[in-house]
Image 1 (tube, helix red, strand yellow):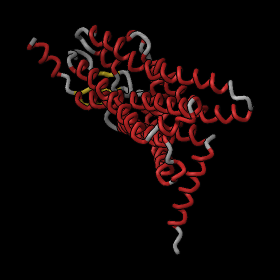
Image 2 (cartoon, one colour; image 1 turned 180 degrees about the vertical axis):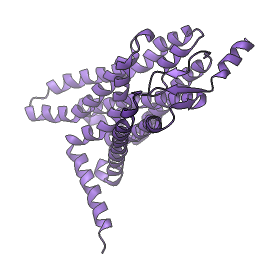
Image 3 (cartoon, rainbow, N blue to C red; image 1 turned 90 degrees about the vertical axis):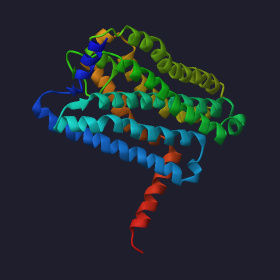
Length: 315
């Protein structure tokens, strides 16, 4: 047992191979992901500032959207800066740094998942029970829903991080990925990963699938309610409030299910692309998706930009 611990401690860092090992690819990839990161931060910050500065947007739906935007900023910041460092300089990451990154990826990624479920519930109440909306989605309840969505995933993430910390790494320290994720790290372990895989299949699947099933069930009820609306204009208005959310859900969960609902042995480069979608691209696209067809949010953004221009203009 003592020998196993010594072997485990001999690996103090990992090597992240990243998206490409070709030297000529590093600068173009650096520029690409730097632009994506700046667009993500700017877009989500504008959403938050527009919602905070416009009293008309002080509703549960936009409160949840601002929380989602803040989580997306944190989520992307957990991944992209490390990628940028790897593109231009060292590709190594410390053992503690790797586990820390993995912890926040799972905590923030699942917070996104739970917030999307809360937003689906908000749309369900607004469309199916509009007369009880104000009492059901009270400020106190909204805060509790956000608090749960942002705190519970940390327990899930802590469980998997602690289980991974008990594994022994005694051979290769090369991670065939651009971030520290469970599957590529478990592949490097020279000790049994049976317990880890069982927990991932049972607890991990429950935490991942439950919000998605909740969203799906909410939209089934919404669809039934919308089909009962007699006017075509009423149906279009109801669907328009849900279209953006459904697009984000499809993009986010589609890529996540592709990566995680498969055996460990089948993990390949295609999963890297799917990982980029839910860790990087979805966070960048969310502000555009939510503001594209939302008149209130676009008006709030115009007001925000108008205020900034008036403040910048000398009197």
